[in-house]
Length: 149
Image (tube, rainbow, N blue to C red):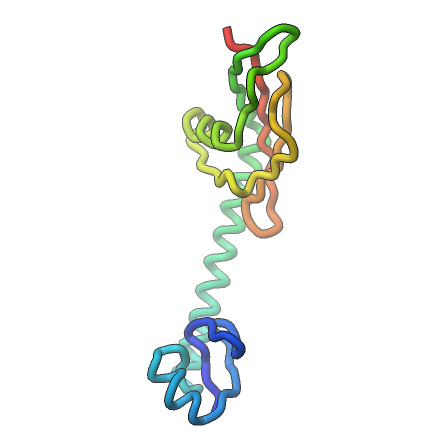
């Protein structure tokens, strides 16, 4: 019996896929539990509509990520840090600090888990940090550490 999965089902498939299931398994488990629906014209139309909506939503999110990428190009975030002799920074600047400063100064909300910080920011000067904004869309956050007066 062909069914459309409404949720991910282990060893069968992912949400939105059309799979072939044993008649008893489909009628006695998948359909009553709300994990799948029988394939018919109405359910196929509904599935097609959901796929279209998802595609539009992803296109919109990608477009927003591209706008944010262009916006980040023009921004240089300056973070004052305490320094000692010879311009050495006490401690380092974390991704959380960078995200908080971006939100405070430019009202741009980013996800710190998406930042690809290879090493700690512990030297004065310019640093470029890549950040994943969306699938295959990467922006660059420019951070300049300056000496605190």
